[in-house]
Length: 494
Image (cartoon, rainbow, N blue to C red):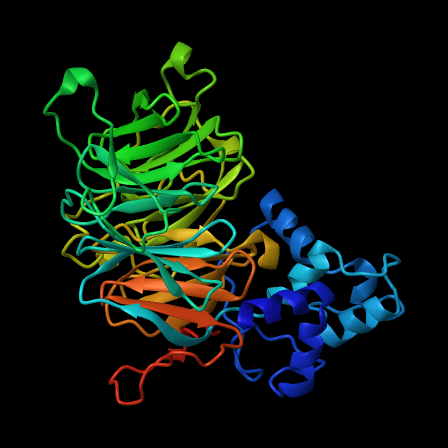
């Protein structure tokens, strides 16, 4: 099986050597971006990121200094797999094995761009696609009340088919508990439902075959008050949930006490995304349609009642946030058609009042982004870097850091309204991959935490799996009108 074979190969680092022996696309002098032909020009650099996060990324995904040397006092970068394997066998590093950075340098060459094969197809929009933290399970949520959980290690066998309770419009978000025993799902209501997915039954129809317990996020004194929840996440210890809502608030729910423990009137518009900053769960990041990202420290929130800081830079509302997991850096996707990288040490205590820079009327739900707005810059932009090329329209499209294990978080990837998945280099800002298959908006996508595999979900109802090298299973029939291909954006080629 692909998973077991890959796992064994990674343990011995023999996979790279075997691919070099049988794959003519990789030569000893390889230096082109993964997924490109060797003769393809490299994408243009968009950012000149001279920041600590750039150095951390390079240190975490660069080979040992002695493995870079091909001749005395001469270094080669990127270092070819053949030379790295030879250096390991010759024990040039003095440790007799690859370090985690050496491993990432090899693995981040193998981007999941081959395919796709189809995991599932429904006749309704797919809104959510997420791997569990260990990659064993995969969750896909659809507008037509269905949430499907697949066992990714057992041939993508259906693990659980959940029919959602009291669905309003769509399933807006889902989250798996760290122990993979429970799943919560949110919709456009103040109730988040929790399901025991460790039960033996495959079919889970709300309160018919299994109980979907409703967790009430509205306060007792707000009976009848209605709002929708756009984002919900488990804490790292599985004891709490954090949620962002359409009533401009952040909610924290204590699962052990089975009650709402905190409500923060956080923004002046919808809170589209929230997440915990790190494993400690003291810091919470939030992004809103008021164009602001905010950082909340729960250790001093009750005494101050204000955010620890505010980050400005987006010209339009924020659709999603993803933390690097270190309590310092995160990224945000914005309706201004950009992803921004943030360092919370640059945050301000208050949002600066600036002269109006928007002189146009625009609604992302049904209008294209104005051409004259594409080159406008926020006068007080506090972001570290900006990434452009994808399209954020019609829905709350998501973006993420690539996995630490296999890439050292070297990349940023996102869905797009133009039906593609985009992958950017974190440091250079260059677009290194564009995955083309879907026929409608790609709202969500998820990169396997260990293997070169990415799964995308689209409003066309397809759940598509991209791999390297790909195992040929469930290929798209030749008779279908759509064709899949890997594309390099010509506009980025100098």
